[in-house]
Image (cartoon, rainbow, N blue to C red; front, side, top):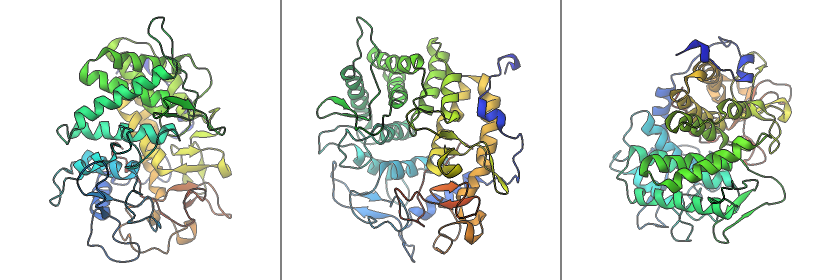
Length: 422
């Protein structure tokens, strides 16, 4: 690595070189234990087992599986309620630590994930449920496709995934055109919408929020399709998407997708000689100055007696509210970036040191019972399931492990994608 090319990320410069107290979990061992726990049909006790069989045969004539989005969910066992961002991510996460999920316990869990390819309702995309209608929110309609693209990389001969992946790329290309993209004369699409409805073939704004970082997720999908099939139209769609971000002045970060754009920028710069502003995109991911979701970024503070630097979420909600899924997903997107732009190796490494250390605070065994909302549940004896979030303060206690009341009942734990790149 050329030390002369070292580049910084502003908020990472606020983080300590060695966080305190320093206590690093064995994340690989935890990921394996998580897999063993959540896919175990033989567990007994409150809310257990977590996994169930879905025999509704939606989209494909095969059984599939479900996991509740949070422990104690009233939808547990209800076919069609399970989410791809939970179930597919669990299969992918296990794969990343060396577990062959295509042949585990006599089951092909990978093939079962194909049921999120929405055939029956005519969407022809991997979506968050097996019967999801597009046009509600970009990130729930793009992230499942990203997850399945990643899963298909490790299991390329699963089902009809190769053809399905190509259809996904074609459909998002068509969506770019519907959002104004043109080749001659060249015109970049407008992603300043909430979602895209593939039935009406129109983008929509719901009157409440916009998700322009959809451009980042689409750029990632289209560039991965181009790498695989060398089809020029996929590169065109990736360029449209990246140029939207490149020209943009205001931070577009909404939920989860923007880090994938930073990765795509670094890779396209390295592989095909583009000059996208990776540093701008990375600072957008960290800063907390998004116009779409003010405060959404990376924590750079000490909370109570703990350094919580590096966790991802709101830096303003209640003084700070970090989320496990967002933290793990951002790590998964950005750690591989340094392969294509080593100038950020120090910055990403320093961030990940802090993040991997602080992320232990999403787990119950790192808190006294009064500093968490679900300390009473004894079903997870090895503490492999993370709380959804970590608040800077709650009722005078700091930090406080809990769930998001606007989404989940108070005191519930979420099943989340484990980060395996730490």
